[in-house]
Image (cartoon, rainbow over all chains, first blue to last red; front, side):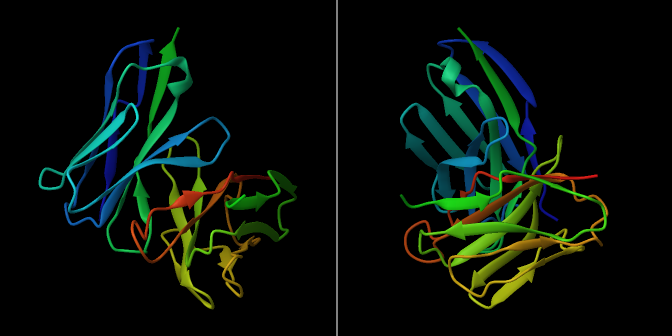
Length: 112
Length: 115
């Protein structure tokens, strides 16, 4: 059964730092991988989606990479800002249109 | 504005009562999903539907029921059989076709408290 792990569970950094969030999954046969952001008490906002045939996706200061063979993805955040403080969730989809399997998230705190 | 709406934002019920959570989308998406989020745990799938009048159980479907009579609506009923119904419930949808056809978009969530 697919399992998704995110390390670290929490991270505190000063404003301006570049940082990397890690996600690993046990079964490399995935359809896609999605990174989300969740603010306290809110729904999820999709940040980046990487199809299984892709190696990375970029959006502004965010860059997500995917290494299917090793079962890993990273989310790189450049020049972090206090507004980036949130919980970041990684999720994989094993088969098209079924469901996402989520990690427990990394809670990021960026101090000014 | 296109999006997914969930109502209400907060819901309180007495134990033993059934309660229905609303999820509506105007994105013309084919697929819709219900997840449950508990503190310290990842989101877990309750039910999903890829087309109207069809739905599939997820990992934790016991004590829940759904219907998909219209493309834009996917209500979730939490029945009295659900042992621990207090949680944050999230609805999502995905296009089901085209580029990034299974990228999921989430609603704002409903926090259900049962006492």
